[in-house]
Length: 123
Image (cartoon, rainbow, N blue to C red; front, side):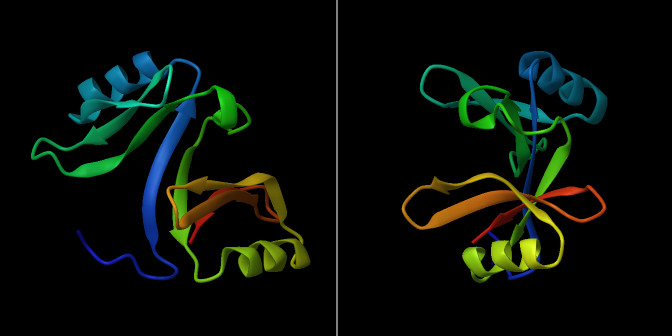
């Protein structure tokens, strides 16, 4: 796995109501393979290339993901998530929703820039 660098895109995913149909769409249109990811009561999908390399995710629009817009969201690595969220608001952006945890050490949060574009920040 390539080292994740500050300021780089490290992940992307799409959250939609019809995650089954949309994951099949991308499987057929671009050749991605899908692998179920148990989310405790439902599945999201990890999308992979033909060699099995991780590409991104297609997620179910439920629970903690219910507020996410139906756009491909990029995740950009930041050094200090709290500082980046504060700077976002200071410069006219918006923090959307709450900061969420993934595992023990990783947190992420959705922001919206002053032009209205969305991005997920992750530490």
